[in-house]
Length: 339
Ligand SMILES: C[S@@+](CC[C@H](N)C(=O)[O-])C[C@H]1O[C@@H](n2cnc3c(N)ncnc32)[C@H](O)[C@@H]1O
Image (cartoon, rainbow, N blue to C red; front, top):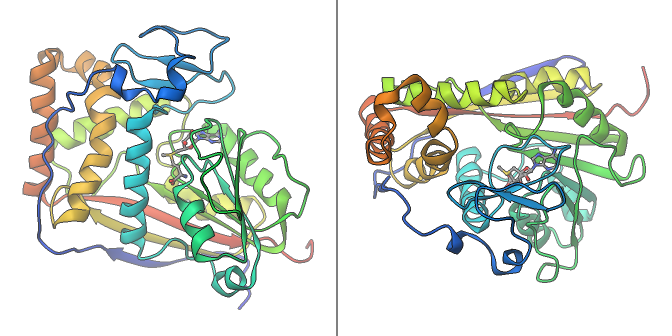
């Protein structure tokens, strides 16, 4: 099958068994416990920045990258690594698999794969175990991936995907990128995809997965405030919060063919474990990151306890309104001949 346009072929809503629900109470662990031991010696004082330091810390002691060339909004400390590991399971279950590009047989036979913005490498590590004949490379602006304890067919390095990639042209058979919506600037997306196309072999596949911000299905008033604020903060930083619905278009612009898109709706804070985990995933950003921006518009929420109660109520509201968060996955192929 050869198509030079793209197809948005699939829509699904994920249902799971009714089960235990998460608590959305505040995580009371103190700031110090959030820092990994290996990074405590390189810390900047809480709330400080230092251009020469690898990390900066906010007032709550959360640790962030300190790269002037990267816009990524979320922390990179141990608490965040746990969240990203958990998010991997949410997305894998929601999409019913780790990937959708038609590369299963090639992965079995042995190919070379790039995981752009790999985070702690959860996807690559699992894929490397599942497909021992293939070789997986992960790159990320933060060195939060394992350097020693990992399968032999898995390697990681620090790199910003908006810069030319440190690999030869046509090196990879398959490039995968997931959940960089809060990391890639609006004007960088085309460059990032063109960087990926450069290192893809002709005939290789590029696959992207993102969550939609701020729109979701059946959002109540409190969740709407939180999601819209998250979207506004991201947009103010030059990011493109609504990029997920444009992934197919972006792949086409990058020159990909045989493009397929999939849109799914995942329950938030209802319908069992998946809904609970997805809420835990979002609540990190809601609790800390966007609070100053929410309270600017809603000063009545300034008090910490009042604000946390508001976030908790937004979680309950998701159950009441049967809210669904939207994710998109799109993949396309690098042409074998230039047309
Ligand atoms: C939400 S995590 C997702 C990690 C991984 N892709 C996954 O799905 O498990 C986003 C990751 O993208 C990384 N990141 C953000 N902007 C980046 C950039 N410009 N280049 C490389 N990595 C980036 C962050 O450091 C973070 O580890």
